[in-house]
Image 1 (tube, rainbow, N blue to C red):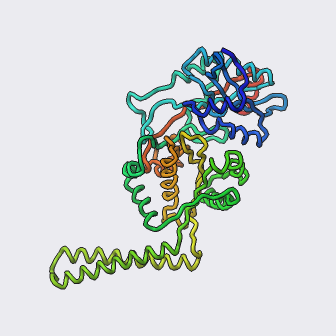
Image 2: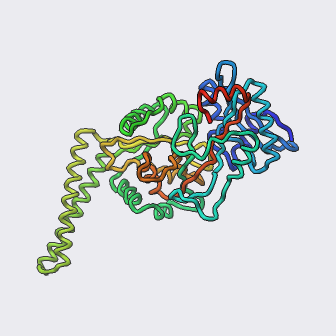
Image 3: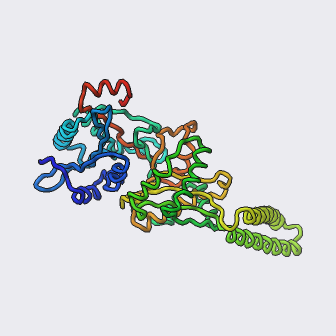
Length: 418
């Protein structure tokens, strides 16, 4: 085995098809880090000129004299191959030490144990606690099986919908009934979804600001989203924007009202012949209620059109599509006033179909806290994702490898890294 630096092309070719690959391990992810002032290198192990392990390793100054190193989403290797892991980690440590490293963080894109849609363990499912132990045995400090979100860590829990071998009809049928109803409602109302360009990102940010204020979280700056699209490329970042075409909505509501009035006329004609029919009297009551709803919606459409013009903004979201294996849903915003139009459902359904049409195997709803109790702060968001079907994924978590053990002990007491 030979430890070495890799060039961009050979690293990218290896990372693209690795089972533990993530968009965060890409050349584009390195470009984002570099814009933020990080330095980096592609490192690997070759055996008979074939790459058998690799990582994107980035670093930044800490405590003036030292550097913090980070293997974003971990190494690309077989973590159960202890010989390879020991060789690679040992050489990585030497590499960091030669560059005044203080410590290294690793957060592998590897699931810990198999879970179902409710977050419960699957009986007889896979268990990768041996990977955790292998890293501990080699000197890494384990940050634990954490829950929740931290600013200094990537998400540890995710919600994923498998797409492989499925079509749109199958996925729609497997959804929760309420989710399916909400999607069908958006289709009936005529909600349009288009992709925002780089120059239109302020539209996305405006809606994110509204959402962050409503839900009580601090959103990223506009520059963060611009950098993502700039570095990953507009072809690999999708920002769907859901709007209600009010001309179309008014026409749909008018058509619905006309259909209900037509049905009422037919029922009344039948009642004229059979005035004591319980069936037709009951049907007339249902139709009258439907007419009342249709009239109310038509009036709403006309009032919204007078207020907003032809287009009513509803919701938006931010997706990374760089990794051809999975689509990543990172963030989203919606106007609270118009949540009844189900704009977020229109976006998710549009993007699920996009993923299917472009050959993605996984639709990753991404972060969840790992707390599936009704009292959890993000329980409503989890329920929204769960409605589309899928399963919970629990990653192994974060590991810290001290490079300068004495100085790291001091730093850790101050910063509580692990």
